Length: 91
Image 1: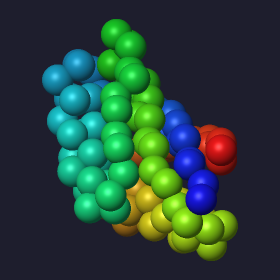
Image 2: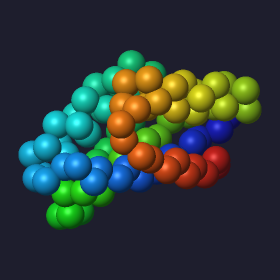
Image 3: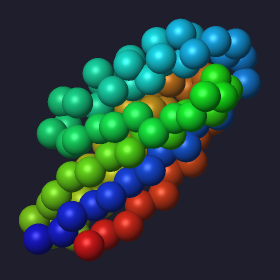
Image 4: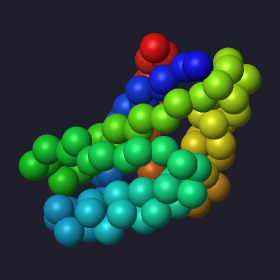
């Protein structure tokens, strides 16, 4: 069994308020919640950057790779206007 800890760093250059950032982050969290993962917002006070932490478990290597691909597909499909960077560690 694998536990995957993932951090998504999001660049939001066109957002000018924390309320605008929160709207986008809530939308992302709603889309990703169907994949049975834990989601937390680790963003600071700067409205043009955001960080989302994800945590999930998988029974084998192919399952967690598939879940990571699904997360990337959701971000690319529904949030194509944002730039993001994904880093993860497998325990």
